[in-house]
Length: 180
Image (cartoon, one colour):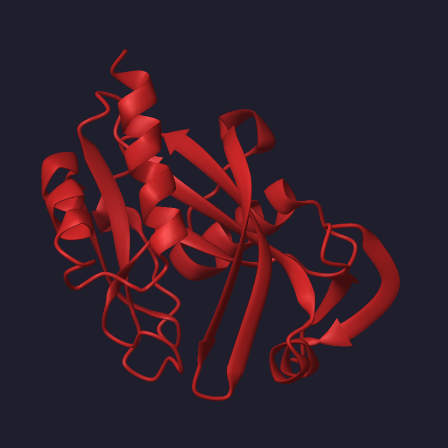
């Protein structure tokens, strides 16, 4: 099923245009993405997914708990709720989400030009990974990581992590702010 996104201008304002995923990535059109990190209730572990081997970008690397593009007509929090259910079979609600910020990102990998306005969320939960249902074409594994290990990997040139440096640095900033 082809996905369609609301096209934004360089300031994040809606243009009124809707474009397919393919068109957004071919033309470098600005669109929205949303990410969630599931963090244990003691704030010491982070649930990460390992991307599928057939993903165009960053196959086999460890990634944010869940996330993806925000579809036409969705708010960012709705996109995160939908993606988390699709990718991991985990039900979260708007009340579970803690919004921690928005950034822009631009990158080009091969023929994909990504220009995103990214929304970042945290969910505190001690999810039992035995109850997770992976979307096999997207995700090949799920694992709890100690937050210090993730911080070390981020600082070590994103060791075995996706190249979503802004996402990872937002996670570090979240931990920095919550330690105060």
